[in-house]
Image 1 (cartoon, rainbow, N blue to C red):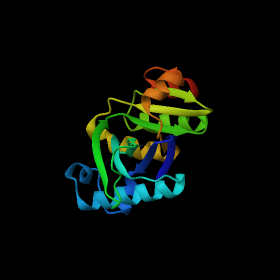
Image 2: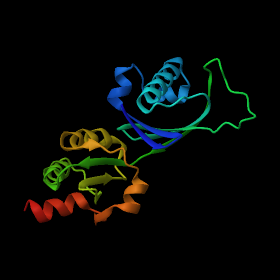
Image 3: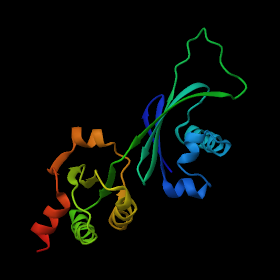
Length: 194
């Protein structure tokens, strides 16, 4: 689990599939509104409170973005309380939850030399397409439009060379550099391995 403070009242929590399974949860438990999910959420809020020295009381808005086969990102916003509003003294936190999913697979790599052999392995497995980006001296391979039966293979191969990115695709497209707009896997193999 990774925590990041975005603003004075907003934090981002990234959980990988391994983080969830270590706690006996699946992404489907979020949809079911299970007791295990509520316990995990309260544990995460406590850790964030300790990490960032925040007092989390009252209402919070939670946006959950499911990163297909990678995990999930939660944006937790503490809703500002008016001076006239009564504060909750009993430790109850009211949640407003929004869930969104993404079919895109985005991995981050420290060096282009990590992406090239990955492209060869993907192409050998019959997986092609993708776009290559860079931002802040890191490389990002975005795989979208992957067939459902190829998702697990794609994620497994990409995890051998990089890490799931907690960067949003929208931020990457807005502030990063697009190196290869499409067919990145085939292009990398063609230009660097032949």
